[in-house]
Amino acid sequence: MAIPVTLLSGYLGAGKTTVINHLLSRPDGPPITVLVNDFGAINIDARLIADRGADTITLTNGCACCSIDDDLGSALQAQLARRDVTNRIVIEASGVAEPRRMAQSIAAWPGLQLASIVTVLDAANVRARAKDKFVGSLVQRQIEAADMLILNKIDLLDADRIGDVKGWLMRLAPRARTADATNGAVDPADVFSDADSHLEGSAPEQEADHGPHFHSTTLPLHAAVDVEGLKRILSRVPSAIHRVKGFVQDTRGRKLLVQCAGRQVRVEPYEARNEPLPMALVCIAADRSALDAFSRAIADWVLSSRPPSKNSVETAP
Image (cartoon, rainbow, N blue to C red; front, side, top):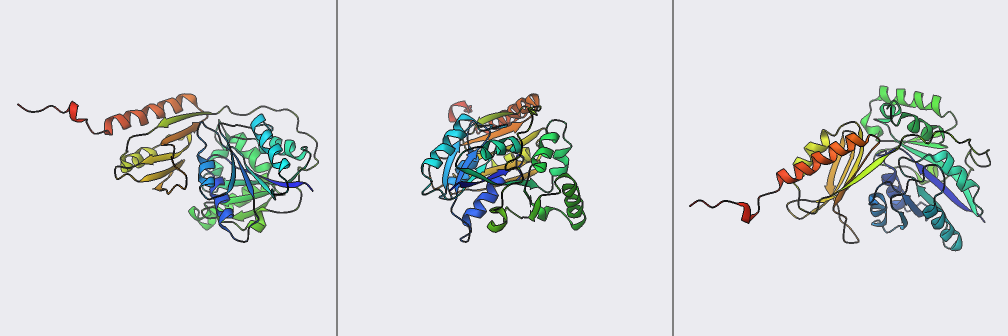
C-alpha cells in the first residue's frame, strides 16, 4: 500500500511550521513523519518540530525548488524501507520551493501517493508578496498549485479585508478548498484529505523559468543580546528582507525564539528539549545587496550594544 504524502507549501514566514506543530499537538490527528526542507545553513524549522517529539528528518540548506533533490530523495527512500511504521509523510517544503514540480516528482515515486498540496498563506501579507517584483510570481504559483489553502494569521484582518483576500484567492485557485487559521490552528481532517491531489497523474509541467534566486546568511549571536534593542531593529526590517528567524540569549540567560516576517516580529522564551540550541539568526532575501546591508546593520548593532570589557575601561588616576 502506498504511503500518503502531504506537501506543505507556502512562502517564507507564512506559518508552515506553526501549522505542523499544531497538528502534532492534536490527539485526533494521525501519526506523521515530518521531512523539513528548510532554506539556510541552520534548519530552524526542523528544530522547532523535533522539540515537539515528532519523528522528524532534517534536510539542511535544501532548496528542492523544482524537483526531489538527492537528500530529500534519500529521505523518502528511507521511509519506504520502513513503511511498516510510516503511516503518513508530511514534507514541509522550503518557503522558496516550487510545489507543483516537487509534487509531480512525488506522484511519480513508486510506493508514494501524493495526497494533497496544502499551501499556507500569511493572510495579512500575501497580496503584497504576490506583487513583489522579485518573488510575486513564485507566491502566485504556490497558490495556484494548492489543493487546499490555509489562511493563517486571519485574526490580523478585518471582515472587509478577509473578503477581499478570499475573493482574490478564488480567482487564482478556484479548485482549492480553504480554511482559516489563527496561530496555525487547523483541523487535521481538513489537512489530511484522502482524496488524490488534482496534480496526481497530470502531465509533467514544461520547464519554465526557475524563478527568483534566493540568498541566506547566518549571523552567529553567541553573546547575550539586548532583546528590546533587537526588537527595534527587526521592527524596521527592510521590505526586501523576507525572513529572519533563529535563537538568541538575553542578558538574564533565557533562550529566546526570534521570528520576523515582514513587520511581524515575535521574540518569546523557548524551552528546548534537546540542547544545545544554535545561537544565531538566519536571514533570507531575494536581493543580495539588501541582505548584505541588513547583516552589516545587525553586526554593527551587536558590537555597539556589547558592554565594554574590564580591560577596555580606563581607570581614573
